[in-house]
Amino acid sequence: MAVSNVTGNIPLWEGQGLCDRYYGDLREGRRDCARALSLLRRGDEEIPFHVNPAFGPQTLPLDVKYGNCMIQVEAAGPDLPEVIYIRPDRFVAMAEWVFTSCVQSPGGAIGGFITSDVTALEDYIISPGISLDQRYPPSTAFYTVSMTTIVPDWLSPGNFEPEMAYLFAKYALDAEQTATAPTLKRELVGRSQRFFDQARQMHPRGFRRPWWIRPQRLGSSAKNSTVALNLPGANTNQTGVVTAR
Image (cartoon, rainbow, N blue to C red; front, top):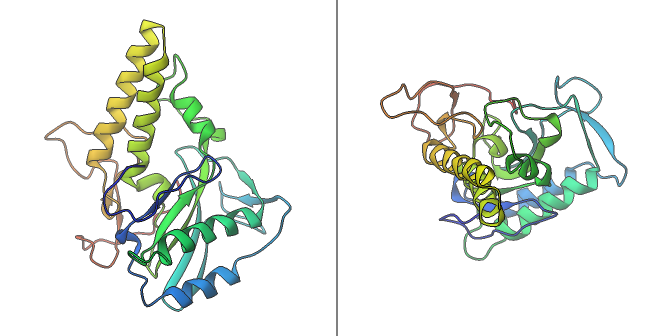
């Protein structure tokens, strides 16, 4: 992801990472984040995390808080499976990446997030003959690990971070460069443009739009297909708990 205000941007296991001041100033929270990191569950065996619905012995989203720091693990995508199997050591390693690259960054000490493998979603986005208005296969779901200052809601960067839409636009554009069939090339250009247009309309706070809905036309209501999020500094008086759906 190429974005402004980024101090760390390193792929991990085919995922994508982003450090940004939106996720908090953690200059006074480094020790709290280290402590929160130590509280995450460990284990090298895959276990089922129930996400749709989030009911069972292990569920997503989950969070761990200590002092002024919070770690959130959330499922992402328009159509979620009932269960996602994850090795706890995997999201611990992802949280360690955010801690090392963002929170301990000498240039910023800010929060950030990282995604799990999004290859299945990339493959779907560039597949011939699909429509982005159709339901996405549950197999395209992924999850994110965020490390932030304490906020009252789920951040869900995998759904609402504009850089995700820019990333998917890049996937389609890169695939168009190597495609040979004229029909597929046109489809990929259209998908890339759609994600670019949507990214420009997305905001990670206030009334938020997920990356998978169709971009709005100029003059349409800005509140259609949005959810409200109340965060410190957000330009909205409305509140709402935002889930991974």
